[in-house]
Amino acid sequence: MSYLDRLHAGLEAIRANDRYRRIELRQVEHEIDFSSNDYLALATDRRVLMALKQATRVGSGGARLLGGRHREHSLLEEELAQWLGRERALVFSSGYHAAIGAIAVLARSVDCIYSDERNHASLIDGMRLARVPRTIFSHGEFPPETHRQAPALVVTESIFSMDGDTVDLGALVAELGDDDVLLVDEAHALGVIGPGGAGLACGIDDPRIVVMGTLSKALGAHGGFVAGPAVVIDALVNMARPFIFDTALPPALALAARVAVKIARSEEERRTRLHGTVRHLRAGLASLGFETIADPSPIVPVILGEERRALSIASTLAAARIVAPAIRPPTVAPGTSRLRLSLRSDHSTDHADILIEKLRACIAIS
Image (cartoon, one colour):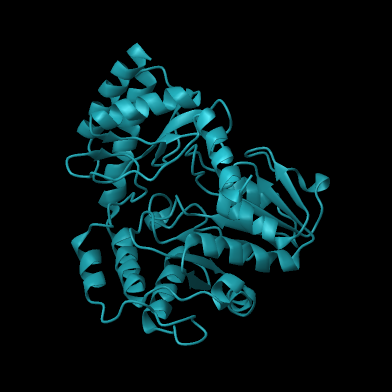
C-alpha cells in the first residue's frame, strides 16, 4: 500500500464519521455571515483599508532581527502596550506563532504547566513543544495551590473560542503562587470587553500576568502579539524561535492594525451595538429551547449534538444565504457538534431574527 493509499484510507475514515472538511468557495454577496471573527467590523472599515493602501512595499524583507525591521512594528507595539496597560509588547506574524513562542520561552522559567482543557490548539501545540510536564485541569476548575507543583506556567483563554464563556481572571490570579506565571490568551476578548475593549486582563496590575492575542479578529488585520513585563519581551526577542526565524509582519499590515487599535479604543458604540445584538440573539435562542450563557462574548454556540445534524442544519441555512458553520470533533468534544455563531458590530437585531426564524424551521424538521 502506497502512502497515497494510506492517506486515502485516513480520509475515508474521516468521511465515515461525518467529520470531513473542505475549503468552500465563499459567495459573500447578500449573505448574512455568522462565521467571521471580525467582531468590530474593522476589516472593511475605510480608515483601516486606507492605511493598508498606503503601502509602498509588500513583504517586510526578512526577520525582524535582520532586514525586516520597520518603524510601523515599533509604533504598533507601543500602541498595544499602552492599550493593554503592560510595560512592552512584541508583534509576531500570527497569533499561532505568538502562542508557540511565548509558551516555549516562559516554560524555561517553570517546572510544570497547567492548562485548561478547552484551550485552543495553538496553545496546546505550544505546550507540547515546550517539553515541560503538563497537567490538564477541568474547564474553569484550576487546582488550588496546595495540590500543585511550583513554579508553574498556567495557560488559559479569557474568552474560550468554541463555547464563548469567560474565565474569572481575578480568582485565577488569586490562586497563583509567588513564582508562578499566567499566560492569558485574549484573542477573542480584545476589542470586545474590558475597559476600552482592552480585554479581561486589563486593570489587573500583576507582573505574573503575560497577555497574548491576535490582530486578526476584532482588529480586522493580521498578526499576533505578546505583552507583559519588559524582561519577558527581551527574552522573547532573544529566545523565541517563531520570532527570531520568521519573516516579520508586512509593515502595511502593522500600520492597518495600529489604525484599528485607535478605532477600537475610541469608538465605544461599536461594542455597545455588538453586545446589544448578542443579548438579542441569546434571547431568541433561549426561546427555541437552547441553553445560553450571560457572558458578553460575541461567540454564541448552538449545541446540536451529532455531526450529521449539525451539518444538515448548517447546509439548510447556507441554502438560505446564512453562513453558520458546523463545528465537529475533534475541534469540540464528541456529542457536542454545533453551529458556532460569531457576531459583529455590523450585525443588526434583524439579522439575528432572520437566523432565529430559519433555525426554528430547521429544528421542526430535524
